[in-house]
Image 1 (cartoon, helix red, strand yellow):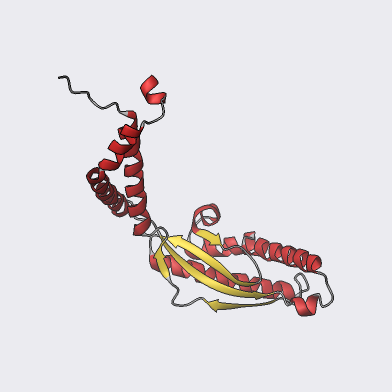
Image 2 (cartoon, one colour):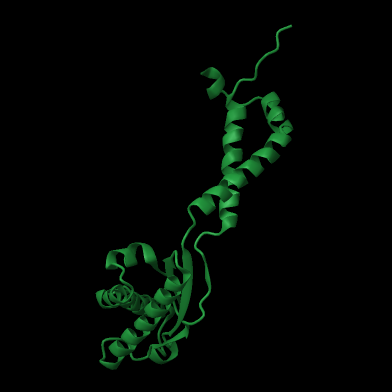
Length: 206
């Protein structure tokens, strides 16, 4: 127990550094394990649609202070974010793609940090075509809903919004293979360090 709790000595650290062959082998083994895990349980594809949101600060708050502009952007962005996740939009997508609203909100759909400029609408699915269609439909439905709210006076009239990317969307695995390779190598090496540091070397009797 005292050996485990004691700080490593200089000799132990030297022994650790000398085991470079073990580190190389460990990195390779860890990377191979990460690759196996990646292909055994492939992560879903992620598609991204983009909507440009312009809050038109110059027109809406021509003489406002920086603080007033900040609160204006925060308030209006929060309103639009609520529309993006509204029951109406989720119900429409749920009906079109036969996916429950709970699954859409908790697993399938992701919204980038809302701000002035591009909003990214992400959709995840193991079928890349479904991921693309879901992201595109969500972005287009969002724009239509916001424009309808502006038309009836329920949203700020100075907001300009348009879909800038909803066709031929980029589709990539949500987690790339490189992440699995790095995680496998790092995890194996970390485990190996603990094993070497906290395992007392055998003494050779003379």
